[in-house]
Length: 199
Image (cartoon, rainbow, N blue to C red; front, side):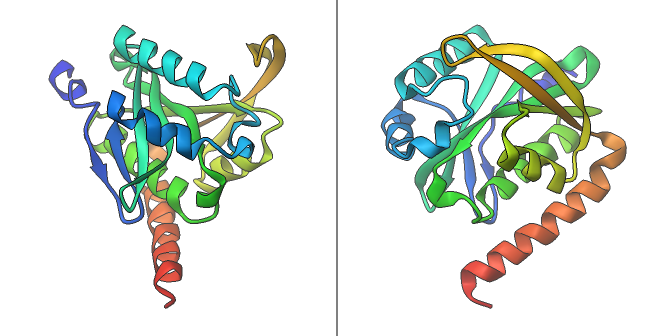
C-alpha cells in the first residue's frame, strides 16, 4: 500500500483541465487566477500570498498534496488532497478554488473526476471526503451534483478569515458509490466538451 500512495502526487490530464503538483513556478499564475475576489468569498483566507505560503508549508510538512488546475496551459485555480489516512484508505479533496471565469465551464467537474478516479482506482481508497463552508451554496450544489452523500454539518468547526466562525458541511463518496459517480461525471464532462466545441 505504501508504494501505491507514493504515487499520490502525479500529473493528471483530463479532457478540460490538467492537474499538476504545485511548484514554485506556479505562484505567479495562481496570483493572476486569484485576482477576482469572488473566488475567495468562502476560503479560509482572502489573502492569496498567505494562501500560497500556507499551501507550500503544508506541502513541505507532508499534510497536503496541492495541485494547480490548468486550462489550455493557463493556471485557473487549485485543488488538493488533504487529511490523508492511507491506513484507513481515506483522504479528502478540498482547498479548491477556481477563477470565476472558469465557473460553469466543466473545469471543476473534470478536476474532481481526475482526483476521484486516482483516489479510487490507483490509491485504492474506500472513502473520499469533502467539506465546505455550510453557507457556500455553489460548492454544496457542486458536491451534491457529483453526487456525493451529505453527511451532516459540524457546527463551529473552524475559525477562518481572522476569527470568523465557520460551520462545515461534510460530504463523501465511498468505493461502493464510485461506479455511479464516475458514470455521472463522465456524462457531465461529455456535455461540457460538446458545449465547448459548439456541437
